[in-house]
Image (tube, rainbow, N blue to C red; front, side):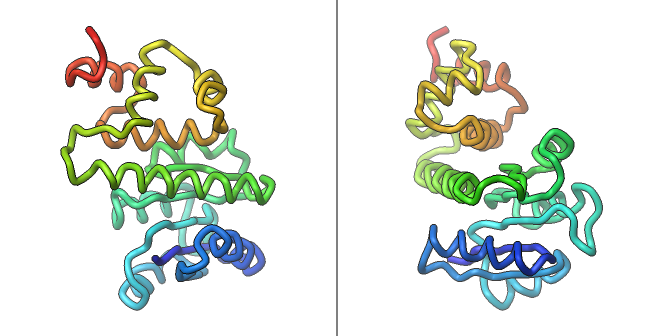
Length: 198
């Protein structure tokens, strides 16, 4: 399993590597300082299982790095780890294709938990992927039901005993799987395909 950290700040890159090694002791951590080195690194080390991407790199501007990674790996779990406040950049990064946005100032445990959740959700999706393009996992069906009830992210987090941050990741992955853009479209899709009573 290859876990990629793309960050030009050596201390942050090392810290991310340590966190990922705690999560996956047998994983291979590949650290890069520029996004332009990614294609070559993939040829050398293998396909990524996860990419942790700094937003501000010497060869990226704004969300260009997110768009480049997403163009190369449309379904790969992608975490943006940035010094920019979430209020400023989370929305644009998620819209560009990131799965989760984490501030570098967040506590280490919170960062580690968000990455673990992202990988767990991806594994959950992988389990259902072979069965049918319309197959949803148990957790995804739970989420659909809660969206139909009109529950907020906070309500869902409380009900499932998970963080609001993790709820956002779950929903983002669900929307991508269903190829919808928002809650109402997800509920409409679920009704059309028999996941909810009409």
